[in-house]
Each structure stands twice: as structure tokens, then as C-alpha cells.
Image (cartoon, rainbow, N blue to C red; front, top):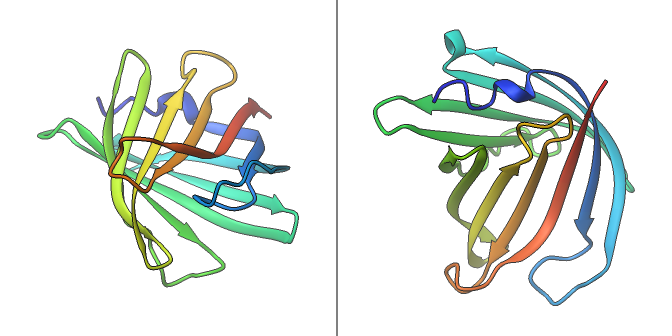
Length: 153
């Protein structure tokens, strides 16, 4: 439904946790803070999430842009990072079922083809969670590499 992301509207403090290296067997995580503000666009058929991310190497801005296709009953999510302002990431596409959203895309990690997965969970609580995982074997196995835990500001 086009209201699937209504839980995220407003201002959030975000605790990020990510692997230091992806798909190389790394098990070392780093944690850092961030904020985001999310609002509807397209008359409620989409939304934009404006992020400030305080990674250990310095602060940067990024946005998640989401749009709902009422015919397919699916969402597309794009990521635009201010460190590469002309490179809009390939969209992950999916939907929510029972309050949990699963979104997938075929992408590249360097010169390596991968499968990308986003999961939105705990959407009916005061602390929603986003996570990203990657697969180098077409989705047979997944490596969780980034989580974001949200708390209202």
C-alpha cells in the first residue's frame, strides 16, 4: 500500500552499524550516529528520507527516494549519496507483508555482480530497523553488512 512507509515520517536519531568490508569474510563492525527526516512526496505515493551520516571518516548527506507502484503493488527505493552526487544507485524493489518489507536488486560491488537485499522490520514499534545484506551467490546465502536502528527525535 502507498501508506507502508508512513511509520517513518518525521525526525529520527539513527544508530548505524556496518561491516568494515563487504563480502570478504570480514567480521569487524563499526558503529556511528546519524539523523534522518522523512516526508511524503508525490501526493503520498512516495517519500524522501534525508540523511546525515557520521561515519568514522567524516559526515556526509544522502537521500533515500521511494515511490509506490499501485498496479504492481510494489515499492522502488533509490539511494543518492552526496559523495557521488551524479550516481543514483540501482533501485531495490519489493513490498511489505505483515509489517516487514523485503526489497531486492541485482547490483555490482566493484566489478563483481551481487544480489542486494533491504529489510524493513519493527515498523509497528517506536524503533524501526533497516538492514542491508549482499549475496555473491544469487541469494543462496546472505551477508548482513549494515543496520540502522531508528529512535524518534
